Amino acid sequence: MALKKITELVRELAEPVVLEHGCTLWDVEYVREAGQWYLRLLLDKDGGLDILDCEAISRRVSDLLDEADPIETSYIFEVGSAGAERALRRPGDFERYMGSAVTLKTYKAKDGRKEFAGTLAGYDDGAVTLTVGSDTLRFEKDEIALVRLRAEF
Image 1 (cartoon, one colour):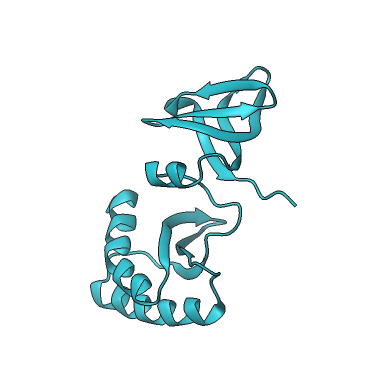
Image 2: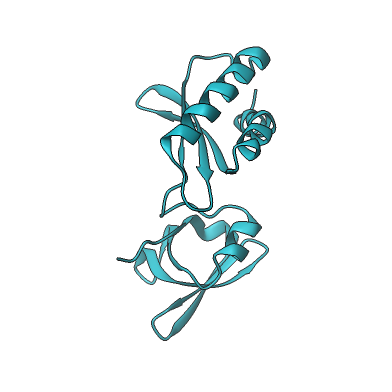
């Protein structure tokens, strides 16, 4: 089964449980790290996510996963917070955080660097515009490796 299909199926199984607990399913990751597969649900909740939310959702979704059995290989299942420096992936993520501080990473160096810290100033069909100091920089969809919120303390 393709990786995208696994994450889509897990999203369909998990989302009703997540919503039932007053949370939002921010992302589903199915990734290989240090020779082991990880299936992660990254959650968000107004007022903050707590360990009890994670435990309750983990138990329910784990049972659903055992029943549906969408993944043939062994994996470690984790449920946690999307975090303050969460990755922005979907158009709605960019709309929600317009004007926020972000870090953008590119696949290839642009102006001698691959990482840009700025303010999210625009999103157009995958292209991202940042305000960096007094400059406005536009990055096309195929240049962008990652865009994540940047926590400023």
